Length: 189
Image (cartoon, rainbow, N blue to C red):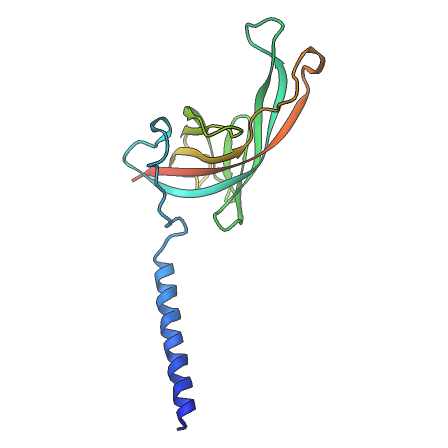
């Protein structure tokens, strides 16, 4: 056997071994294996001990606001939150569900879905909707949402109420604003 053939055979064998080791390492990681840490979050929106991350998604979409009279404040108006309409994507950007409301509903493409009740919010920086922690109601349908106990909204970008005027002249009008946020789904350990 020529020297070049033996070297080529060894390189091919070594490449196959390295590729196999890499794939085995990747296979041992779940799709959500990237460590998620709550360390930098305000205490108010941290999930209680005894839970683990079940799924991480990136919500990309719009939030609708409506110009309404302020409650118990005659002659004053505000942009009131109506609801979201967003795609839920996995970390690679593939759509795996949707988030919409009211009521706030996270639905996986497998048909399972949850609604939730807000527990807490915390500021997320100027121009961004706040971080949020919600306690999930029992899931409807069987699938990825089954057993979800909490959902965190973090890494928010945009989504705040419109800066345009809201007054008697445009009461009832609606505006949408773009936003993005990570939604972290938690289950009991």
